[in-house]
Every structure is written in C-alpha cells, then in structure tokens.
Length: 320
Image (cartoon, rainbow, N blue to C red; front, top):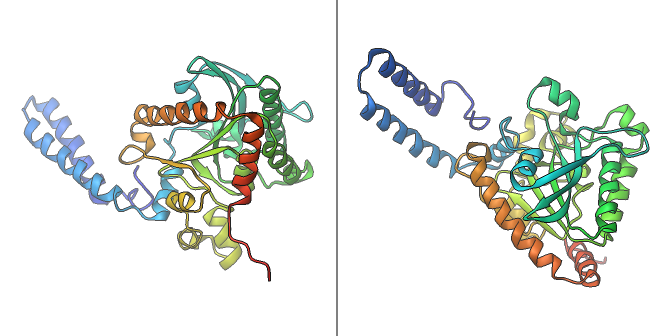
C-alpha cells in the first residue's frame, strides 16, 4: 500500500510490483536466470517511487500518516527504550488502552512516556479504541506526568490520534474537562517535555498530551485543530471533501515550522516510516538525544518561563 491515490490496484507501481513478483516466481519454478529482468523492474519501481513521493500533496501525506503499517507509539518505545514499565488505570474509573503510559530508560537515563496507541487488527483496534482516548486515558496520562515531575524525570509524549473519543460515555465522564486539565497542568509541569507527532495529531485529543517544550513532527504527519473529515463535515456537511479541507487547514509540517508550532521536521525514509522503521527510529533517537540534552541543561525556572513564552507567541493578535 502506498497512499490513497496509489492504493488503486491498476496504478503503474502496483502493476510493476506484480510483474516483479511474477518474474521471481517464474525464475524459481522454471530454474531460468531472470536476474537482469528482475533488476530492471526493481530499478523502474525505485525511480517511480522516488518521483511519486517527491511530489506528494497535503492530502497524500495525511493518508500516509494513517497507513496501517505505520509505526505506532509502542513500536518506538520498544526500539528506543529499555526496561519499560507500563502504568495502568487512572485510579478514578478504569484503564484506557488508547493511551499507553509508563517509565523506561532512554540512553540509560530514566524518562516518563505517554502516548496514543492504535491497533493493527480488529481485536487490537477495539482494545485501543482506534487510538481515540477517553477521559480515563487523559487522566492516566496526567497521573504519569505528575509522577515524572515528582521524581524529576523528563517526559516524552508520542502523539498519534485523529481525536479524543466523542461517544456518550466519554462525554458523560467529561472528556473535555480531562483534556483542559491536562493542558493546564502540562503548562506548569516542572520537568522537560518533548512531544513527537508520529502520525495523526487531531484536535484536542492530540493537545491533551501536546503542551511541550519542544515539538517534533515526522515528515508525513499532521497536527491540527481538527481532522480533515471533521472540518469538511462542519463546513460543507460533506466528509468527502476532506482533501479540500486538508488544503484549507494547511496540513503541511512546513507550515507548523513556519508558525513556530513545531521545532523540527524529522525526515522519513522514502515512501514513509513504515518502509524502513529502523532508519526512522534512528532519526528519532538522534533528535531525542539532542533535545533532551538541551532541555535538561535549563533550570526549571527558565524552562517554565520559556514554555509560557512559547505558547504566548503563537499566532497574530491585534486590539481593535
């Protein structure tokens, strides 16, 4: 699978991939050396992939952020950290599988982790609520944040959700209030916080763990006040106009960098993070080492002051 427009079975890349598979099978079955033909098609596929991914539009990048094989929060935790100990439950209502929290070691130093986790099959998606946290998820994250502050360990936030769960039960348990409390508490949390948008970063669901000192975003990710489908449904009463909404929302990581919302765009392997997770993990690891070192060298007083100034400086204001 490539992107929404490249998923069509009749697109040139898929056709060549099928030809490549047929040649490989034919070579094995007939014991005929077809290595030259196989190499030629592999080269054509690589050229076409490079040309395609260098010209991706905003909507295509949104689709890549949702790719079913894209690395999720726990993939990065397993690759980058050791001794991960997960925390369960908010001690108020229950445990939320869409929000994973705990403590681990990164480069032999302790860190706290909060992250949104999606599933890869029907059973996992039900368990993870399709990556849409409920109030108890945000309260579990807050519990972890307060423990991080108590034990003076930095916090890593892995953002990947289309939005908080909007169901009746979620509203009854005050999901809006839970997100608001997290935003307030993160703004004054006395420990360094790094946020990484690894896929989708939709609405308050993302912001509930997104008030940070440094925000990194993967090249094929987005971070927005609303998902494209939600925007299209509100503006035009038609979710099918999501590609148009994505353009209007300027869902391009470069815009986040320009407006001072993101601090760095992390390049992905050609075709997306799912095609070379090891390379993507190395890129993220390098960035985390850099920013954790930078933030832990700042006094808590200056850290909180800089965090305050960071969010006060976002946007343009005028007094009429």
